[in-house]
Length: 304
Image (cartoon, rainbow, N blue to C red; front, side, top):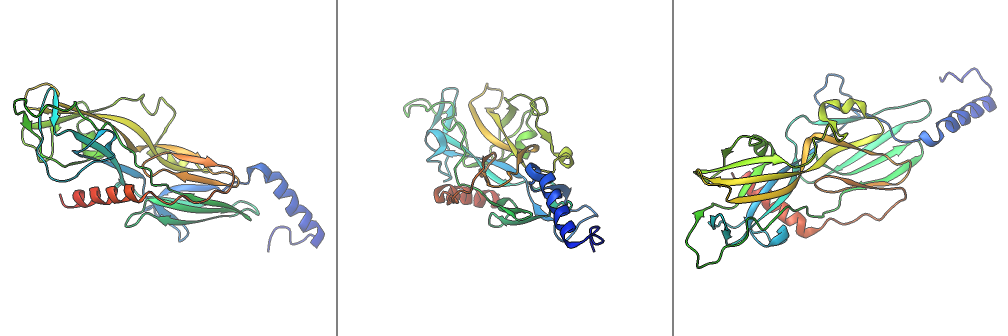
């Protein structure tokens, strides 16, 4: 029995209408964020993984649109590599803390959410949201491929002296790349090679982004990883930088809040970022070429 039970039928309708009017423009889905392992877990929580990144380096053309993951040993020196090498940032599920969206109810307004995930993952692909009787259109991911600088250090002429061999393909998770921030780390599967990394953007906290630990401050938006430019420098022995690559990566340590529209859709990009549209839109089919490349990188990564 509601608190309006003592009123007459007309009064109940009038009171309910009044609350709806008061909520008016504030009629948007509301959620709380938890860690999936939190003790307060409820059956209606929706688990999801933030997007992380793995960086694939292989042979290929500029912009990474023809990246090859076939085994190769290009010769590299200060002038570049022969054959040329390419890089691409590939979305993967963050293997740290899993988050949970908990629908929050208000007087006469309820929030319902139902997820669709990328295959074999808890990364959100489609999130259908309903606030009271107003259904928000699906949050649909599109399959655009996000690449970094693909032609690394230029391409050497075939008749030049042989340089140092670099064993490809390379699959470097962002978590491992971060260990090389300000301190050289061994390059996987390449004895004598090291890598150093640095982010070339403004510190996210100064730019207004949210640290993952502060997720509890958000209730009217979907939290997703931000994009950041990462520079990798590959060196052999005591020589100067031989290969440099810059890629845009999804960093799950820093989040951006994408507001839920009152009615419409949020279109998530596979790696990071989203487009907010106030009206219903036709779902965009994921780019099969991009999905195929992502699957190939995942297969190589899993075989390491």
